[in-house]
Image (cartoon, rainbow, N blue to C red; front, side, top):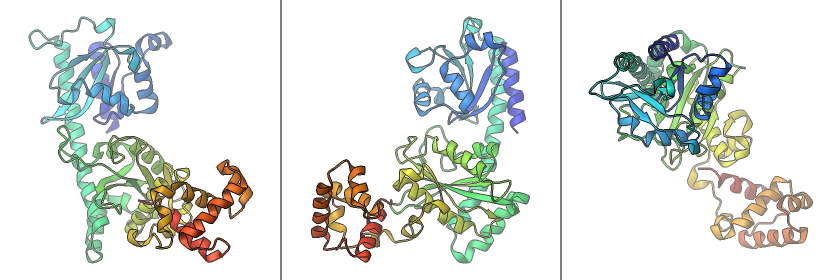
Length: 409
């Protein structure tokens, strides 16, 4: 399928005699036309296009800047002026890639001197524009077909992950039939959480079926949003990734990196607001629900402890393998609850770091940047608040685990 996109983009590049790029509606790079030599690169590129090609995606800020011109609603080609402050040194010609009224991506051309006289108007359009838009429509049909196929696989994956035990065998069989031989190979399951699902997205007719076209081009076997995955009721994204071997999870890590930059990653739809978890890779689908539990736990741990993330693997999350299994309403012991109040945030931070340092006062005071006597004073206040004895191993364990559990969402 990737070869078909490249061929179609090359057709558009040939029509205009200028390199074109194709991005999906989330500004992920799909294909780009060849540039000339070094001299051509210097005059035809700007930071935004260079970053898009090298990193295979544009930033959320770049996406927001271009979308502010209404490209997601555009029915015809449009010009976008340059803005050096945004890194857009050259204007753009945007060809919307649509199918049956839904935008699936964009073809971009640099609006340089070579295309300065190109007439985009409906009255006397340049015949090259009509030819390019016909090709863009073919691209739209391909992307729509990918989206439909990916959505069907995503629904089957969601059915399996959310099925009651009595229905799992049937759901597993249906997904196995749809995946074919890949269902028996090494697989990894990713969780990205939280994941925003907007059913009322005006230019995403499959907004509850995230990234289906991305899945078809990236080695991801299936993607789906799973509602009520987190204790607060938020959704998470599940991504089933094909691996070459159980000991080689690199494709899953690459997919996580791409998905974490999606505008849907995070409760507010911003990069850096979500975390990803990777369950232990399995062969086949038999233990997929266990892998999903591990992936969700790892994602929650990555969100709680940023040193673990933004992608955490189940095997590396330590005590969170236990803590994520606790019911949210029972994770905070009643003795420790007073310490968890906002007014005692500094005391809680001091105590957690002291316990992280295995009770070594010198290390903890140095890490906190305070005098050792100040540390002792704070710890005495903690004992008064909680009634726990920091010289008692079991009390210290209870306090440490409760403070860690309080980070989880």
